[in-house]
Length: 102
Image: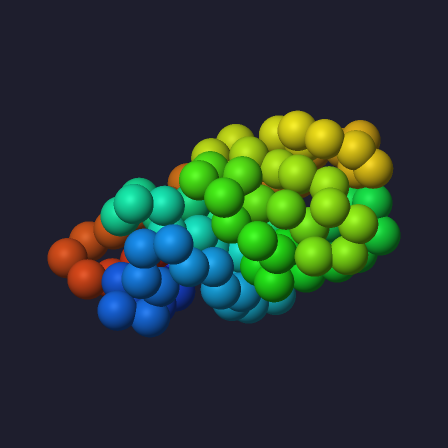
């Protein structure tokens, strides 16, 4: 059964930013896109790069190592060299708290 986990606050993830957090042993990348928060796995399936350290361009995260692109809203791969999607997770904002469902 899915469980919600409190991760951080909106103050720690301002619009346009990305940050990694470990939640229940999973390393997740969180993105704030114009006040909407999204979460995906923080590991690029191409070569293991931390996606949270990439460049956020709208809803696209560009991998910092080899420039693979992913949609942070769904985890869908948008451009090689990655060919696999990353998992996305439901995010909830309650007041100032950011929660993720695993």
